[in-house]
Length: 211
Image (tube, rainbow, N blue to C red; front, side, top):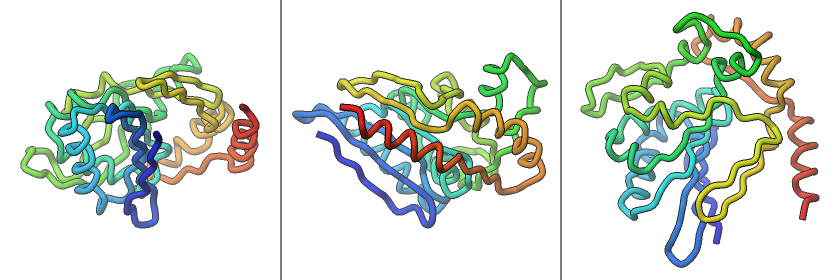
C-alpha cells in the first residue's frame, strides 16, 4: 500500500508518502511549503510518532522558500525527543556536500547553506524567529541524520522494502549550482534554484520504462 497526500503549501510543495501493509507503515515527507504550512508539518510529524511509526526520510528537493520554510517552521515546533525518535534521515543537497565530493572545503560558516534563513516561530522552544536551517538541525540534535549529497542515479533501500531511485539533480547541475549560483545566493534573502527540466524529464521517462 502506498498513499500519497498533497498537503496545503501555498505555491510550493508539501507531500506526505505513507507506505507499508497491515498497519505496519513507514513515512516520507517531501518539502514543506511556505512557513504557513509549518503548524501542519509539525502535526504530521507528531501524528506519525503517536502511531509508533518512523519517518524514513525528510527530503528537501531544493532551497526555494516555498519548499524550505514550512519544513523549518515545522521542525522548530517539534521536540528534540520526538524528532530523534521518529526521523531516520534528512536528504538535503548542500554546498558543503557538493564541494566535499569535488575534493574542496571552505572555512566554517562560509558555505551557502549557512546563509539560508527561514522565518519560524519560537513555539516556546526559545530559539530566534529567524534561524539557519543547518543550525536548527544542530539545536534539535538531528544533524547527524543529514545526507548532504544526493545525485541522479543514487539508489537507497529503506524499511518496509522501499527501493528509492533518484532522477534529479545530476552531477552537472550540482556543479553548476556551486559555480554559478552559490556566489549569487550569498547576497539574496530568497534563494532560487531550478534544476534542468529536460534532464529531469529524460530521467523520469527512463525510470517509467523500467519494469
